[in-house]
Image (cartoon, helix red, strand yellow):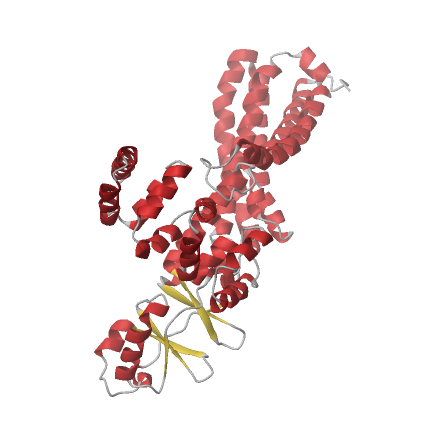
Length: 455
Protein backbone atom coordinates (compact mmCIF):
# COMPACT_ATOMS: atom_id res chain seq x y z
CA UNK A 1 0.00 0.00 0.00
CA UNK A 2 2.83 2.36 0.88
CA UNK A 3 4.55 1.45 -2.38
CA UNK A 4 1.41 2.37 -4.33
CA UNK A 5 1.30 5.77 -2.63
CA UNK A 6 4.96 6.42 -3.44
CA UNK A 7 4.28 5.53 -7.08
CA UNK A 8 1.31 7.90 -7.22
CA UNK A 9 3.32 10.69 -5.60
CA UNK A 10 6.23 10.21 -8.00
CA UNK A 11 3.88 10.14 -11.02
CA UNK A 12 2.06 13.33 -9.94
CA UNK A 13 5.33 15.17 -9.35
CA UNK A 14 6.64 14.16 -12.79
CA UNK A 15 3.44 15.35 -14.49
CA UNK A 16 3.64 18.65 -12.64
CA UNK A 17 7.23 19.15 -13.77
CA UNK A 18 6.23 18.34 -17.36
CA UNK A 19 3.19 20.64 -17.02
CA UNK A 20 1.14 17.92 -18.69
CA UNK A 21 -2.34 18.92 -17.59
CA UNK A 22 -4.17 16.31 -19.70
CA UNK A 23 -2.22 13.36 -18.33
CA UNK A 24 -2.52 14.81 -14.84
CA UNK A 25 -6.32 14.85 -15.12
CA UNK A 26 -6.38 11.30 -16.50
CA UNK A 27 -4.15 10.06 -13.69
CA UNK A 28 -6.34 11.72 -11.06
CA UNK A 29 -9.48 10.25 -12.61
CA UNK A 30 -8.28 6.68 -11.98
CA UNK A 31 -7.02 7.35 -8.45
CA UNK A 32 -9.13 6.81 -5.34
CA UNK A 33 -10.09 9.98 -3.51
CA UNK A 34 -8.30 8.84 -0.33
CA UNK A 35 -5.06 8.36 -2.29
CA UNK A 36 -5.43 11.78 -3.91
CA UNK A 37 -5.85 13.39 -0.48
CA UNK A 38 -2.78 11.51 0.79
CA UNK A 39 -0.73 12.75 -2.17
CA UNK A 40 -1.94 16.34 -1.73
CA UNK A 41 -0.78 16.38 1.88
CA UNK A 42 2.70 15.29 0.77
CA UNK A 43 3.08 17.96 -1.94
CA UNK A 44 4.41 21.50 -1.66
CA UNK A 45 1.83 24.30 -1.28
CA UNK A 46 1.94 25.57 -4.87
CA UNK A 47 1.68 22.00 -6.22
CA UNK A 48 -1.33 21.27 -4.01
CA UNK A 49 -3.34 24.06 -5.63
CA UNK A 50 -2.43 22.93 -9.16
CA UNK A 51 -3.39 19.31 -8.50
CA UNK A 52 -6.62 20.26 -6.73
CA UNK A 53 -7.67 22.54 -9.59
CA UNK A 54 -7.09 19.65 -12.01
CA UNK A 55 -9.68 17.49 -10.24
CA UNK A 56 -13.13 17.05 -11.69
CA UNK A 57 -15.52 19.43 -9.91
CA UNK A 58 -17.59 16.57 -8.54
CA UNK A 59 -14.56 15.01 -6.80
CA UNK A 60 -13.17 18.13 -5.16
CA UNK A 61 -15.47 17.97 -2.14
CA UNK A 62 -14.82 14.26 -1.59
CA UNK A 63 -11.05 14.72 -1.74
CA UNK A 64 -11.21 17.82 0.46
CA UNK A 65 -13.06 15.92 3.21
CA UNK A 66 -10.12 13.47 3.54
CA UNK A 67 -7.54 16.21 4.10
CA UNK A 68 -6.50 17.00 7.65
CA UNK A 69 -7.72 20.35 9.08
CA UNK A 70 -4.36 22.07 8.56
CA UNK A 71 -4.35 21.32 4.83
CA UNK A 72 -8.05 22.13 4.52
CA UNK A 73 -7.50 25.59 5.98
CA UNK A 74 -4.49 26.24 3.75
CA UNK A 75 -6.29 25.07 0.61
CA UNK A 76 -9.36 27.25 1.24
CA UNK A 77 -7.07 30.27 1.37
CA UNK A 78 -5.58 29.42 -2.03
CA UNK A 79 -8.47 28.26 -4.21
CA UNK A 80 -10.88 30.55 -6.04
CA UNK A 81 -13.81 31.86 -4.01
CA UNK A 82 -16.28 29.99 -6.24
CA UNK A 83 -14.49 26.72 -5.48
CA UNK A 84 -14.40 27.50 -1.76
CA UNK A 85 -18.15 28.22 -1.79
CA UNK A 86 -18.85 24.97 -3.67
CA UNK A 87 -16.72 22.91 -1.27
CA UNK A 88 -18.23 24.34 1.89
CA UNK A 89 -21.79 24.12 0.56
CA UNK A 90 -21.45 20.46 -0.43
CA UNK A 91 -19.57 19.17 2.62
CA UNK A 92 -21.41 16.87 5.01
CA UNK A 93 -22.46 18.79 8.13
CA UNK A 94 -20.20 16.84 10.51
CA UNK A 95 -17.19 17.38 8.23
CA UNK A 96 -17.97 21.10 8.00
CA UNK A 97 -18.27 21.35 11.79
CA UNK A 98 -14.91 19.61 12.23
CA UNK A 99 -13.37 22.16 9.86
CA UNK A 100 -14.88 25.22 11.54
CA UNK A 101 -14.49 24.32 15.21
CA UNK A 102 -10.72 24.86 15.34
CA UNK A 103 -10.71 28.14 13.39
CA UNK A 104 -10.51 31.65 14.88
CA UNK A 105 -13.87 33.42 15.15
CA UNK A 106 -13.11 35.90 12.34
CA UNK A 107 -12.15 33.08 9.97
CA UNK A 108 -15.36 31.19 10.83
CA UNK A 109 -17.41 34.30 9.98
CA UNK A 110 -15.57 34.69 6.66
CA UNK A 111 -16.25 31.09 5.63
CA UNK A 112 -19.86 31.13 6.79
CA UNK A 113 -20.53 34.09 4.52
CA UNK A 114 -19.81 31.77 1.59
CA UNK A 115 -22.64 29.41 2.61
CA UNK A 116 -26.38 29.57 1.88
CA UNK A 117 -28.59 30.49 4.84
CA UNK A 118 -29.78 26.91 5.50
CA UNK A 119 -26.20 25.65 5.69
CA UNK A 120 -25.20 28.54 8.00
CA UNK A 121 -28.04 27.75 10.40
CA UNK A 122 -27.14 24.06 10.39
CA UNK A 123 -23.44 24.75 11.01
CA UNK A 124 -24.15 27.15 13.87
CA UNK A 125 -26.51 24.61 15.44
CA UNK A 126 -23.81 21.95 15.51
CA UNK A 127 -21.16 24.39 16.73
CA UNK A 128 -23.46 25.33 19.60
CA UNK A 129 -23.08 21.86 21.13
CA UNK A 130 -20.30 21.37 23.72
CA UNK A 131 -16.77 20.60 22.57
CA UNK A 132 -16.11 16.87 22.10
CA UNK A 133 -19.85 16.14 22.31
CA UNK A 134 -21.74 13.81 20.00
CA UNK A 135 -23.58 16.88 18.66
CA UNK A 136 -20.33 18.10 17.10
CA UNK A 137 -19.70 14.67 15.61
CA UNK A 138 -23.12 13.74 14.18
CA UNK A 139 -24.60 14.57 10.80
CA UNK A 140 -28.17 15.90 10.94
CA UNK A 141 -28.84 14.76 7.39
CA UNK A 142 -30.48 11.35 7.48
CA UNK A 143 -33.47 9.56 6.01
CA UNK A 144 -36.31 8.35 8.24
CA UNK A 145 -39.77 6.97 7.46
CA UNK A 146 -43.06 6.87 9.35
CA UNK A 147 -44.41 3.70 10.95
CA UNK A 148 -47.76 3.88 9.12
CA UNK A 149 -46.25 4.27 5.63
CA UNK A 150 -46.35 1.32 3.30
CA UNK A 151 -43.08 -0.39 2.51
CA UNK A 152 -43.38 0.59 -1.14
CA UNK A 153 -44.00 4.27 -0.33
CA UNK A 154 -41.08 4.21 2.07
CA UNK A 155 -38.72 2.73 -0.51
CA UNK A 156 -39.82 5.33 -3.05
CA UNK A 157 -39.19 8.05 -0.48
CA UNK A 158 -35.73 6.65 0.34
CA UNK A 159 -34.76 6.62 -3.34
CA UNK A 160 -35.77 10.24 -3.74
CA UNK A 161 -34.08 11.36 -0.52
CA UNK A 162 -30.90 9.29 -0.72
CA UNK A 163 -28.77 12.27 -1.77
CA UNK A 164 -29.65 14.08 1.47
CA UNK A 165 -27.95 11.87 3.99
CA UNK A 166 -25.47 9.17 4.82
CA UNK A 167 -27.17 5.90 3.90
CA UNK A 168 -26.64 2.89 6.12
CA UNK A 169 -27.87 -0.69 6.29
CA UNK A 170 -30.68 0.30 8.66
CA UNK A 171 -33.84 2.36 8.16
CA UNK A 172 -34.99 4.63 10.99
CA UNK A 173 -38.66 4.80 11.88
CA UNK A 174 -40.11 7.88 13.62
CA UNK A 175 -43.51 9.07 14.77
CA UNK A 176 -45.26 12.29 13.71
CA UNK A 177 -43.15 14.26 16.23
CA UNK A 178 -39.89 12.81 14.83
CA UNK A 179 -39.35 10.72 17.96
CA UNK A 180 -37.35 7.61 17.17
CA UNK A 181 -39.40 4.42 17.38
CA UNK A 182 -37.09 1.77 16.01
CA UNK A 183 -34.61 0.90 13.31
CA UNK A 184 -35.09 -1.88 10.78
CA UNK A 185 -32.31 -3.68 8.88
CA UNK A 186 -32.39 -2.76 5.22
CA UNK A 187 -32.47 -6.42 4.17
CA UNK A 188 -35.70 -7.07 6.09
CA UNK A 189 -37.13 -3.86 4.69
CA UNK A 190 -36.46 -4.85 1.09
CA UNK A 191 -37.87 -8.37 1.57
CA UNK A 192 -41.18 -7.13 3.03
CA UNK A 193 -44.43 -7.04 1.05
CA UNK A 194 -44.85 -3.73 -0.76
CA UNK A 195 -48.39 -3.05 0.49
CA UNK A 196 -47.73 -3.76 4.17
CA UNK A 197 -47.04 -0.93 6.63
CA UNK A 198 -43.56 -0.38 7.98
CA UNK A 199 -44.82 -1.29 11.47
CA UNK A 200 -45.45 -4.86 10.26
CA UNK A 201 -41.69 -5.43 10.01
CA UNK A 202 -41.39 -5.52 13.80
CA UNK A 203 -38.98 -3.65 16.03
CA UNK A 204 -35.33 -3.82 16.89
CA UNK A 205 -33.79 -3.15 20.33
CA UNK A 206 -32.75 0.48 20.19
CA UNK A 207 -29.27 1.75 21.07
CA UNK A 208 -29.22 5.55 21.09
CA UNK A 209 -26.99 8.26 22.48
CA UNK A 210 -27.87 11.73 23.84
CA UNK A 211 -26.73 14.63 21.70
CA UNK A 212 -24.74 16.13 24.62
CA UNK A 213 -22.89 12.90 25.48
CA UNK A 214 -19.12 12.77 25.11
CA UNK A 215 -18.02 11.46 21.73
CA UNK A 216 -15.93 8.80 23.49
CA UNK A 217 -19.24 7.24 24.58
CA UNK A 218 -20.29 7.01 20.91
CA UNK A 219 -17.06 5.16 20.19
CA UNK A 220 -17.71 2.76 23.07
CA UNK A 221 -21.31 2.02 21.99
CA UNK A 222 -20.43 1.43 18.35
CA UNK A 223 -17.55 -0.85 19.31
CA UNK A 224 -19.47 -2.72 22.02
CA UNK A 225 -22.64 -3.34 19.99
CA UNK A 226 -20.86 -3.65 16.63
CA UNK A 227 -23.03 -0.93 15.07
CA UNK A 228 -22.67 0.64 11.65
CA UNK A 229 -24.70 3.70 12.61
CA UNK A 230 -25.72 5.17 15.97
CA UNK A 231 -28.83 7.38 16.23
CA UNK A 232 -28.51 10.62 18.23
CA UNK A 233 -31.52 11.88 20.17
CA UNK A 234 -32.50 14.73 22.47
CA UNK A 235 -34.02 14.40 25.95
CA UNK A 236 -37.46 13.70 24.46
CA UNK A 237 -36.28 10.98 22.09
CA UNK A 238 -36.42 13.13 18.94
CA UNK A 239 -34.00 11.85 16.30
CA UNK A 240 -31.50 14.68 15.66
CA UNK A 241 -28.81 12.95 13.65
CA UNK A 242 -26.62 9.91 13.21
CA UNK A 243 -23.03 8.93 13.92
CA UNK A 244 -21.49 6.46 11.48
CA UNK A 245 -18.64 4.05 12.00
CA UNK A 246 -16.29 6.10 9.79
CA UNK A 247 -16.89 9.09 12.08
CA UNK A 248 -15.84 7.18 15.20
CA UNK A 249 -12.79 5.72 13.46
CA UNK A 250 -11.51 9.29 13.13
CA UNK A 251 -12.31 9.90 16.80
CA UNK A 252 -10.46 6.73 17.85
CA UNK A 253 -7.39 7.87 15.94
CA UNK A 254 -7.54 11.36 17.47
CA UNK A 255 -8.09 10.05 21.01
CA UNK A 256 -5.31 7.46 20.69
CA UNK A 257 -2.90 10.06 19.32
CA UNK A 258 -3.80 12.46 22.12
CA UNK A 259 -3.26 9.75 24.75
CA UNK A 260 0.14 8.89 23.29
CA UNK A 261 1.10 12.56 23.41
CA UNK A 262 0.01 12.80 27.04
CA UNK A 263 1.86 9.62 27.95
CA UNK A 264 4.98 11.32 26.61
CA UNK A 265 4.16 14.56 28.48
CA UNK A 266 3.46 16.37 25.21
CA UNK A 267 0.47 18.64 24.72
CA UNK A 268 -2.03 17.47 22.12
CA UNK A 269 -1.12 18.48 18.55
CA UNK A 270 -3.97 19.36 16.20
CA UNK A 271 -1.89 18.68 13.11
CA UNK A 272 0.65 16.15 11.95
CA UNK A 273 4.22 16.13 13.23
CA UNK A 274 5.40 16.78 9.68
CA UNK A 275 3.42 20.03 9.48
CA UNK A 276 4.03 21.25 13.05
CA UNK A 277 6.52 24.09 13.27
CA UNK A 278 9.43 24.25 15.73
CA UNK A 279 7.73 26.99 17.78
CA UNK A 280 4.55 24.91 18.22
CA UNK A 281 6.53 21.80 19.19
CA UNK A 282 8.50 23.86 21.69
CA UNK A 283 5.31 25.22 23.32
CA UNK A 284 3.74 21.76 23.51
CA UNK A 285 6.77 20.20 25.20
CA UNK A 286 8.37 22.84 27.41
CA UNK A 287 5.63 23.04 30.05
CA UNK A 288 5.84 19.45 31.25
CA UNK A 289 9.63 19.40 30.91
CA UNK A 290 9.88 22.36 33.30
CA UNK A 291 7.50 20.66 35.74
CA UNK A 292 9.61 17.49 35.61
CA UNK A 293 12.82 19.49 36.10
CA UNK A 294 11.50 20.90 39.37
CA UNK A 295 10.16 17.49 40.40
CA UNK A 296 13.52 15.85 39.72
CA UNK A 297 15.22 18.49 41.87
CA UNK A 298 13.76 16.61 44.84
CA UNK A 299 15.80 13.62 43.71
CA UNK A 300 18.93 15.75 43.85
CA UNK A 301 17.96 17.01 47.29
CA UNK A 302 17.42 13.42 48.46
CA UNK A 303 20.85 12.34 47.22
CA UNK A 304 22.50 15.37 48.79
CA UNK A 305 20.95 14.50 52.15
CA UNK A 306 22.78 11.15 52.06
CA UNK A 307 26.24 12.46 51.14
CA UNK A 308 27.82 10.99 54.27
CA UNK A 309 26.26 7.62 53.49
CA UNK A 310 27.66 7.68 49.96
CA UNK A 311 31.10 8.78 51.20
CA UNK A 312 31.21 5.87 53.64
CA UNK A 313 30.41 3.20 51.01
CA UNK A 314 31.11 4.50 47.51
CA UNK A 315 29.95 1.27 45.87
CA UNK A 316 26.36 2.33 46.66
CA UNK A 317 26.55 4.77 43.75
CA UNK A 318 27.10 1.88 41.34
CA UNK A 319 23.65 0.47 42.08
CA UNK A 320 21.76 3.78 42.34
CA UNK A 321 20.85 4.18 38.61
CA UNK A 322 19.87 0.52 38.42
CA UNK A 323 17.57 0.67 41.45
CA UNK A 324 15.73 3.90 40.63
CA UNK A 325 15.44 3.10 36.90
CA UNK A 326 13.82 -0.24 37.71
CA UNK A 327 11.23 1.44 39.94
CA UNK A 328 10.47 4.01 37.25
CA UNK A 329 10.16 1.36 34.56
CA UNK A 330 7.79 -0.72 36.69
CA UNK A 331 5.70 2.36 37.39
CA UNK A 332 5.58 3.32 33.72
CA UNK A 333 4.39 -0.19 32.83
CA UNK A 334 1.63 -0.12 35.45
CA UNK A 335 0.56 3.39 34.45
CA UNK A 336 0.38 2.54 30.75
CA UNK A 337 -1.74 -0.55 31.39
CA UNK A 338 -4.07 1.34 33.74
CA UNK A 339 -4.52 4.45 31.58
CA UNK A 340 -5.31 2.36 28.54
CA UNK A 341 -7.76 0.15 30.45
CA UNK A 342 -9.56 3.24 31.80
CA UNK A 343 -9.64 4.86 28.34
CA UNK A 344 -11.33 1.79 26.81
CA UNK A 345 -13.82 1.48 29.69
CA UNK A 346 -12.37 -1.87 30.74
CA UNK A 347 -11.62 -0.48 34.20
CA UNK A 348 -13.60 1.96 36.35
CA UNK A 349 -12.88 3.78 39.61
CA UNK A 350 -14.99 1.24 41.49
CA UNK A 351 -12.46 -1.47 40.53
CA UNK A 352 -9.69 0.27 42.46
CA UNK A 353 -9.41 -1.99 45.50
CA UNK A 354 -9.54 -5.29 43.57
CA UNK A 355 -6.96 -4.05 41.06
CA UNK A 356 -4.77 -2.69 43.84
CA UNK A 357 -4.57 -6.17 45.37
CA UNK A 358 -3.80 -7.76 42.02
CA UNK A 359 -1.10 -5.19 41.18
CA UNK A 360 0.46 -5.58 44.63
CA UNK A 361 0.76 -9.34 44.08
CA UNK A 362 2.24 -8.90 40.60
CA UNK A 363 4.60 -6.10 41.67
CA UNK A 364 5.84 -8.13 44.66
CA UNK A 365 6.58 -11.10 42.40
CA UNK A 366 8.39 -8.84 39.91
CA UNK A 367 10.34 -7.13 42.69
CA UNK A 368 11.47 -10.39 44.29
CA UNK A 369 12.56 -11.81 40.93
CA UNK A 370 14.51 -8.65 40.06
CA UNK A 371 15.94 -8.48 43.59
CA UNK A 372 17.29 -12.01 43.36
CA UNK A 373 18.80 -11.24 39.95
CA UNK A 374 20.55 -8.04 41.10
CA UNK A 375 21.79 -9.61 44.37
CA UNK A 376 24.29 -11.65 42.38
CA UNK A 377 25.83 -8.42 41.09
CA UNK A 378 25.74 -7.00 44.62
CA UNK A 379 27.62 -10.05 45.94
CA UNK A 380 30.27 -9.60 43.27
CA UNK A 381 30.69 -5.85 43.76
CA UNK A 382 30.36 -5.48 47.50
CA UNK A 383 29.89 -8.73 49.37
CA UNK A 384 26.93 -10.29 51.25
CA UNK A 385 25.70 -7.12 52.96
CA UNK A 386 25.57 -5.14 49.70
CA UNK A 387 23.85 -8.10 48.00
CA UNK A 388 21.19 -8.13 50.74
CA UNK A 389 20.76 -4.35 50.52
CA UNK A 390 20.30 -4.14 46.74
CA UNK A 391 17.97 -7.19 46.73
CA UNK A 392 15.65 -5.69 49.37
CA UNK A 393 15.87 -2.21 47.84
CA UNK A 394 15.06 -3.52 44.38
CA UNK A 395 12.02 -5.45 45.62
CA UNK A 396 10.59 -2.50 47.57
CA UNK A 397 11.31 0.11 44.90
CA UNK A 398 9.63 -1.98 42.18
CA UNK A 399 6.56 -2.44 44.38
CA UNK A 400 6.39 1.27 45.21
CA UNK A 401 6.89 2.30 41.58
CA UNK A 402 4.16 -0.06 40.43
CA UNK A 403 1.77 1.23 43.08
CA UNK A 404 2.44 4.83 42.02
CA UNK A 405 1.81 3.92 38.39
CA UNK A 406 -1.45 2.18 39.22
CA UNK A 407 -2.86 4.60 41.78
CA UNK A 408 -2.06 7.93 40.10
CA UNK A 409 -4.49 7.44 37.16
CA UNK A 410 -7.27 6.60 39.67
CA UNK A 411 -6.54 9.71 41.72
CA UNK A 412 -6.65 11.90 38.62
CA UNK A 413 -9.90 10.26 37.51
CA UNK A 414 -11.52 10.92 40.90
CA UNK A 415 -10.37 14.54 40.62
CA UNK A 416 -12.11 14.68 37.22
CA UNK A 417 -8.79 15.05 35.41
CA UNK A 418 -7.62 13.05 32.41
CA UNK A 419 -5.95 9.81 33.66
CA UNK A 420 -3.59 10.00 30.68
CA UNK A 421 -1.90 12.89 32.50
CA UNK A 422 -0.34 10.14 34.64
CA UNK A 423 2.27 9.89 31.93
CA UNK A 424 5.36 7.74 31.95
CA UNK A 425 7.74 10.70 32.62
CA UNK A 426 5.60 11.91 35.55
CA UNK A 427 5.31 8.45 37.12
CA UNK A 428 9.01 7.81 36.54
CA UNK A 429 9.99 11.08 38.22
CA UNK A 430 7.85 10.35 41.29
CA UNK A 431 9.17 6.78 41.45
CA UNK A 432 12.77 8.03 41.12
CA UNK A 433 12.48 10.30 44.16
CA UNK A 434 10.85 7.53 46.18
CA UNK A 435 13.51 5.05 45.02
CA UNK A 436 16.37 7.29 46.13
CA UNK A 437 14.89 7.74 49.59
CA UNK A 438 14.14 4.02 49.98
CA UNK A 439 17.57 2.88 48.76
CA UNK A 440 19.67 5.12 50.97
CA UNK A 441 17.39 4.71 53.99
CA UNK A 442 17.85 0.95 53.72
CA UNK A 443 21.61 1.43 53.33
CA UNK A 444 21.72 3.42 56.56
CA UNK A 445 19.70 0.76 58.41
CA UNK A 446 21.34 -2.40 57.03
CA UNK A 447 24.95 -1.19 56.88
CA UNK A 448 24.86 1.01 60.01
CA UNK A 449 26.04 4.02 58.03
CA UNK A 450 25.71 7.71 58.88
CA UNK A 451 22.60 9.32 57.42
CA UNK A 452 23.73 12.83 57.78
CA UNK A 453 23.77 15.90 56.29
CA UNK A 454 24.74 17.02 52.91
CA UNK A 455 22.27 19.87 53.17
